[in-house]
Amino acid sequence: MSANDDRGTSAAEQPKPTPDRPEPRDLLVETRHTLQTVDGELAYTARTGRIVIREEEVKDDVFEGWKPRGELAVTAYTVDGPEGRPDPERPITFVFNGGPGSSSVWLHLGVLGPRVVDAGEPNAPTPPPYLLQDNPETPLRATDLVFIDPMSTGWSRAVEGGKAKDYHGWKKDVEQVAELIRLWCTREDRWMSPKFLAGESYGTTRAVSVAEHLFSRFGMQLNGLVLISSVLDFATQDFRYLRHDEACLSYLPTYAAIAHYHGLHEGRSLREVLAEAEEYAAGEYRWALGRGNRLTDEERYAVVQRLSGLTGLSEDYVDRCELRPEHWRFCTELLRDRGQTVGRIDGRIRGALHFGNAEGMDADPSIDAIMGPYAAAVHHYLRSELRSELDLPYAVFSDAIEHWSYKEFEGRPISVVDKLERVMRANPHLRVRIEYGYYDLATPYGAAEDMVAHLRLPDSGLDRIEHAWFETGHMPYVGEATRVEEAEGITDFVRRAATP
Image (tube, rainbow, N blue to C red):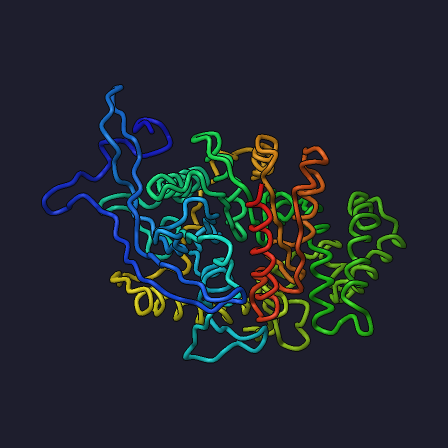
């Protein structure tokens, strides 16, 4: 990678090794464990720590070596083969969350890893102190797992004297994660393994982008992608612009689902409510929004009544917001008469409004409910059970999202749908699993379904996409029953996609 292009900082800006600043080195601690799973006892090796990521540096056409840029945190689980070493033919799955600016703790200790945190149930969170428990359904039964914390998350940091912000953007984020995967597969002899990527939220944007980069840059093909609460086309859920009709259509079924959960569709089933909302969004609501001020008074009032009935919002509010309720305000408006707000990450979870006439919540109660258990669990687990000696703060969330760069998309909507289409056309064996949560206001299921409906793929390509819907929010694993269901579904997907 040239030091003079926009993919990295210049050679002059890079830190140089000195006696006081030695060359950074990989630091991984290894421990061995056993776990009783639903398939029987599983013996596995865990490695946790940091791996140095380097970039090729060329100055005035002279190659100056691979220069260290970052130390990325990983936690890997491998099941040994007959010779006591990881089996190079066993599937391997690389996992990350999203944000951007989120560590991988959620998927790691929520559903996929061999140990998971007991965070309780929606609206019944576990009180501190918290507990870890075995995960008998872990997909480790079917695939080795490597959890990656991108730059500035978890224990990942720039090298001493380096700039973490250089990696706080779509392109550099993709390059760092892809490089770690390439490096891992090379050092561990995993190029011949069935390979998978699993991402959640912005992690689905990352997963699709990394998959395309791995192929176009290194020729690496994958067997499958697991996209949990996906967002590949940001325009389908963007309320920031005056004409945000598409987002309104995408969110309507989710609004209706959350209203149903909180008792505002008495006597009706969730499936019945969702079917009505989906049909209305695809037909009359789309038509009405497209009409704008050409609607007659009678037509407009009919829309107000229908939206109020579906969303649980008052007719007055629907009228005042021009038939276009925005999702942050929906959170605070739905249960305002009860003095409560619902969560954006998980609309099932309620919290107290900090002020009676607040336009927006001061904090997402669904994040508040799970932050404590996961933060405590990861700090305990990595040091006490996996024996890491790192003691710097583990960044569950970083502030990277506040200045994340999408400069590659300047002047156009942020979308990586074309990259999914590209890798699925290039690899006729690549399979995709997409998971949706009905109560997810961060990545509404209607937007993700709409993205799939507009993929430019032949029927044979669409047949390689499977779908799973959950009566949950953004994180299907919040709640024991759906955690088990999700873990089993991913395990089954990997087993099928890894078999020729």
